[in-house]
Image 1 (cartoon, one colour):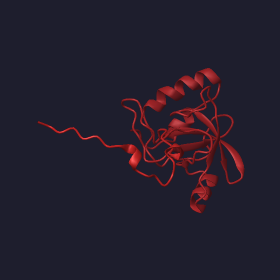
Image 2 (cartoon, helix red, strand yellow; image 1 turned 180 degrees about the vertical axis):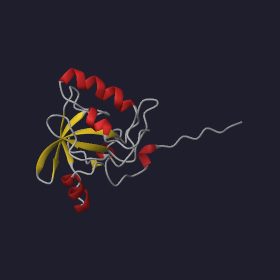
Image 3 (cartoon, one colour; image 1 turned 60 degrees about the horizontal axis):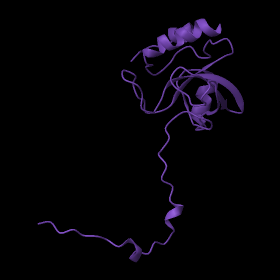
Image 4 (cartoon, one colour; image 1 turned 135 degrees about the horizontal axis):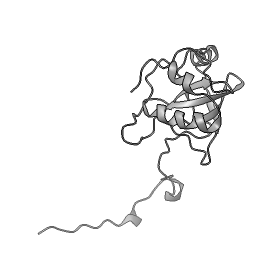
Length: 153
């Protein structure tokens, strides 16, 4: 009924050996040297984004080294080190957590208060519960960050 066809792979000649192809999966997560987008109106963030030199992650402050929404990271921006909170990620998220088109951060100082006065993009509502847990546990105050957000998704 159906004819079985077999192809002999040895008769094909490849220009490059097969072992040189990289077949690992694409990683879409926040780790070291990931480019980020500043979404608040802090002066240093506006200058870096206008010059086309977005900040890069140089440290993720958690055990795995992979950033998720609400994690604190250290970024290199315009030759300086600043701390930031991840407020939107490109990677696939859990249910009821939106997926964004870019990796968004809000710059903060050492006490946890934001450097800007307004956040331009909507931030996920799950961030309220995540930052609430981190506020009580670590002694820093992230409630100001939630207060300057104009929209929630």
